[in-house]
Length: 223
Length: 293
Image 1 (cartoon, rainbow over the protein chains, first blue to last red):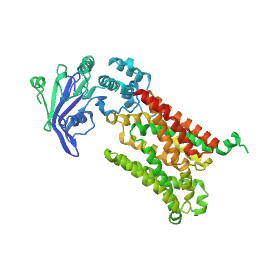
Image 2 (tube, chains in turn orange, red):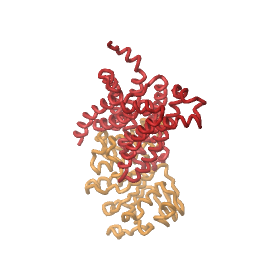
Image 3 (cartoon, chains in turn blue, purple):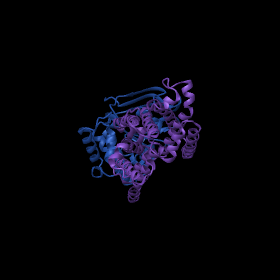
Image 4 (cartoon, rainbow over the protein chains, first blue to last red):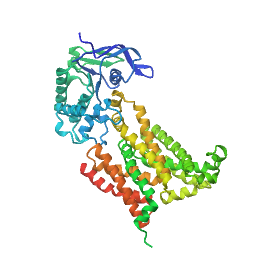
């Protein structure tokens, strides 16, 4: 069996020593497409931060075998006052590998270009990111995450606030990525229903813990 | 008698070069203040720095008698530019960095932040005048501030501003990508293992250094104008982040040149002339913003 990119064993995460979610056992396998769902304030973001390594576990253990993680934040968190082009936003994905005066090399520029092509936005690379529609911005952020050369791609509510057509395009794109590469995908969403056909499992966060929903619960959207 | 441009250059070239340098560097940092939605810091911080300079003047006699400045007496210290500027720069830096810390704390209380910044600006403005006038040696500084004249910029002042602004520029270029990433998307910067806290401190230090040295040598009026106006004008015209920086800096340099020209031709004080020239850039900036929608 191929080893998991991320393994959580009895892990608890929280703030100021207070656990928000605890006793979590989870393996993020290559090629898996996991949905994480739960009500507002249930601890989805806390779990996400724990998986990303932004929070140390309060107890239990976290084993990461990734070289890099890709992260797609909620697009509402990105201020539209920045006059960034789509290309400038996508190239930020390479900033983790750059320091000081080192400029983006040919490989990084080419990776940004192919990532934009992959999400169908190469023709809009010179436009202002803030002028794109919600779905297009989300795809541009996925392209940026791909430039991070991730083993695990973590997306925070990528389908909220976009129309059904854009939702289908984003989910279809993620499914293609997962099939073509050993990339594992974690999708945080308050509504897993539109994604259920693509997801290998749905984890429900609530009551301070995480449990895997059965296929029936997942289909019915039961928490 | 008509004064030739050669004579004007001979008399004022250090002031012009310092204004040009400020015109290039200040808008770069102003761009960050604007997109981080802290543009009002560009007005408040130079006033905090000016209050620091006045405080330094007010405390100077006491400082010399108790702490000392290289064993100099009051008269000799005032006649030694290096000694007095280093001393005043220390006070300007303390009040500017203190102001940044104060504003960062208030930034957590978004709903009243603007009110506190306005209050800080008003108090610092009054303190600048009152402390300066209460000092037996600070009234010339206050007089210069009120009239918006660039304080006399000689070789030493130019060397100071060139060294500090040069350092700020190098650090800005070195860490620009990190500054942008942390400002735009803090969470992703953390995922990419950036030292976010250190980068935010670096930005505060760059702004603090620029404001304190710029205010001490060029006065707060020029700093207000160059930190705020060119970035605001450039924002309406920019079609990328890269062009945003370039347009802002070019407008800053153009403002310094045009302000200097107007100051000589019309005999206006240089500080307000630079700001008036920078304000002209707002016209195409406004048109660009309206067209962009």
